[in-house]
Image 1 (cartoon, helix red, strand yellow):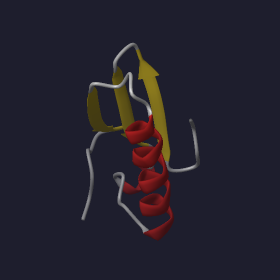
Image 2: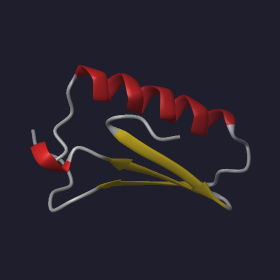
Image 3: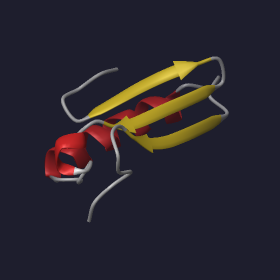
Image 4: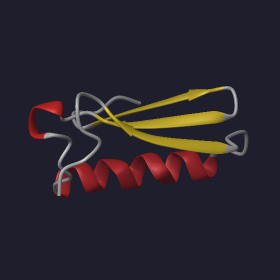
Length: 64
C-alpha cells in the first residue's frame, strides 16, 4: 500500500510502515494521520503479521 504520505509493505510476518514526507521531515498532518490509521487497520486484520516496524524515509523519523 503506497499513498502520498506513507508506504506500507508486508514481507512474511513483518509489516513496515514508513512515513514518506522527507521534504518536511515526515511531519504528521491530518491527511497522514488518516493514512496511518487505514494502514494500521489493514495490518490488524492481517492474521499473518506478527510485528510492525515504524520508520521514516529520509533523514528524520518524524518532526513534531
